[in-house]
Image (cartoon, rainbow over the protein chains, first blue to last red):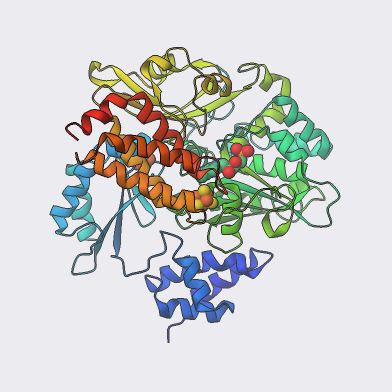
Length: 158
Length: 415
Ligand SMILES: Cc1cc2nc3c(=O)[nH]c(=O)nc-3n(C[C@H](O)[C@H](O)[C@H](O)COP(=O)(O)O)c2cc1C
Ligand code: SF4
Ligand code: FES
């Protein structure tokens, strides 16, 4: 059985207190659960459901709607490269190719050591600094194949 | 030019309360609190401010729709979901001047008699959540927010709520569903949120940029704001410029600025001496304009509507002569197919099929008859769905195919 850490339990109570109805806390709680457990597995959905008193199927039906909630394990550094118009114009796919060849993974894949995974995503709101990618709570912008090689090297040793 | 939104954007440490106050911050709120609630709404009405989230609905009028004698609480939700492709202006305001948003929200809450308010921030902007939360914490510590708004007998709590990745949650009723803890399925309107929104209570949803204009309007007066811009499009507006320009970025200009001058003077023109081919003036959901159409357009709601497009979110995407328009449309169509929430059959199926057909065309496997099929699908989607996302796919499909038909036919050559 999985369980929130003491710190996460404190966070949980704080989150629930921000809303007039408990249900409104569900998505932020799923965010918290993902931070604790890495992704929203059946086990995590069961746990959140029990904690908040919703059926696990209900919890999963919400989780599957939102792309930032992972339905399978993601790498420690989950790279989401924008594929939308401005990034595409500015060479997003050259960057994707660079990542693929540096890490020897495909879009949707993960390195064997679980450090990196790669996905394409929609407009990140970085069109003026395109191409861009999101890695956790960080943005990397004005990407070039060269800058990507440096970013990956740094994250490898992090 | 007078700046309403970006006057302090480059000031060092503007994110801090102290700096914000030194730049005149929270004086609009002080002034608002000396006025009647109804007088604040009247002032916003008189300013002519229109919603900057895309639809351009008059802000004061929207506030006026909220029933004053409802037994239920009223909610203000700040729409910070900014996900319209080509749009990155709200982000700049929140990253660099977060107290401006908090002040705008506080004034709106006072006017609306709202005591609990949320900022719905797209999940990808988690790095901005840290900045906003710090600013909120400071505002609580300074007793601007909390049990007594700037010392008045008026409680106000503002909380930050992170989305988890879904373009559709920028649509106001989907945002409300999502905030309530459900899948982001848009609701049928009516009832409009002003009557029955968050938790079936009166709710106002406003865009970040809209709310950020409010402190200036209160401080300087509606007339000063209304003296800028054009007859029906008052004030200033942020435009996010990206694509083939020398200086992409966010620019604040008075409404009515000629589009081509804007591209040349503000965003530095097109690189490598290339010619302009087309512009999407208001985010990917609005019809594209050809270079020739751009010549007579000025940046305001009416001029863009007259040219057959829309001001939308002010996301200006510029394409030079080397751009292959069918490829652009394919990228856009994939986006809508991915983001359709799936509730309405015409949208779920239509966006999916349009994307497939376009991928086929771009891969050189399309037939000329596919172009008719695309337009037919567009007709079958338009105006038949719960929310405007389906129409938002129709706009680019129809305008790209009709205006750049030769290019599409070239891709289909031999078939
Ligand atoms: C598909 C779709 C996506 C939208 N996305 C956003 C958004 O990201 N941000 C926003 O402020 N408004 C967005 N809107 C508009 C909102 O529904 C709503 O009109 C707006 O938030 C109202 O605020 P305003 O009156 O201040 O503009 C979207 C609308 C649709 C149909
Ligand atoms: S139009 Fe599309 S996105 Fe909007 S409610 Fe219908 S299916 Fe969902
Ligand atoms: S198109 Fe990539 S960030 Fe907007």
